[in-house]
Length: 77
Image (cartoon, rainbow, N blue to C red; front, side):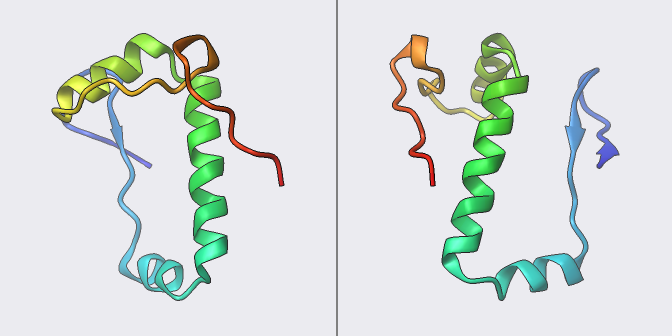
């Protein structure tokens, strides 16, 4: 992960072309598992206020991502 030139506290992840090619070749189930783990990480460690700022910055409506906001839990595997 490298420091982005944006706002203080912002970071950007830029994978290499080789990493992207390797990820592209993974089975869909593995990709979905990775996506679920990433979403759980964000839910656990990023505050709702910061997620709302992200949504605003990216031009999206805020989507409920925590149980207290009405989101559904991710099924356990």
